[in-house]
Image (cartoon, rainbow, N blue to C red; front, side, top):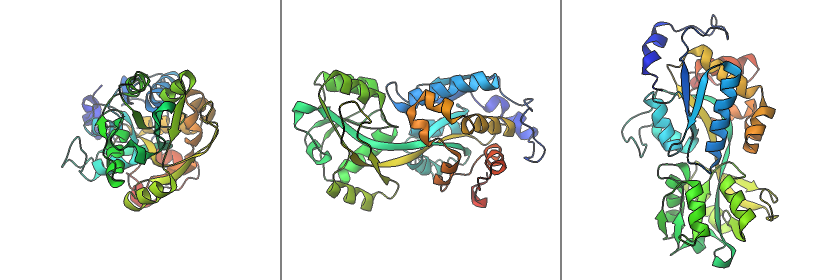
Length: 324
């Protein structure tokens, strides 16, 4: 549901953080939509589980919606079409400064952070008999990189260009790409999502596969050329039958909302998620990183005043320049 029906109301009834209460629902919408991503990816599971949880706890009709992923989600929040979006901070930063591939020239200055989610590792899966065991081996191969406009669809082509890898790139949702790999229609599926990636887990259970991130030489080159990512090791045992650690890079994910969302609603969403990590872990194990202290991994996007209020009530300092 679009936010425009309550944007004017919210603007006219802005309540200060000092006087607002968690019980103030007078300016809440009747429903809210959470932008997720394609089926078979972590966003889809996390976002739909979050919607169900918020519906239960806040007595509001919340629902997840399949989208192209973070690049689209941040724009859908900016325009008011979605109340909440799940975003990766690389695409979010590009949108913030007006360099989104989806909406070039539009500074997404109405977007506000709610809470940290988890890190998104970049990972590749191939069939074991393909002989493809590194990103450099993708040269000349058919590679699906997830949905167009999503984090993997945006960054994997950039990473391959940085490494001098020339692949035939295609775009598809996680579940579709996994099926294409199994059917031999593509040679590799390069993705990015909270681990374990459900589509990867299913493939590993059904077939003999290789999984990898970046080798030492590739990792050094990627880190030199892409400061928006950080190194990460995916522990052995994350996927059944794959006991070796995988070195790769990752980006942080945050849930975001529109600046006009009522302060009390933003507070309650943040409170429900930040105070119930066990319940969030039941939704997806990636939520092990959905913790208050990880708010510090947001270095540019202002937090919604409702989120700021919850964090400061719970002794999490939000820098002055990130108070939206």
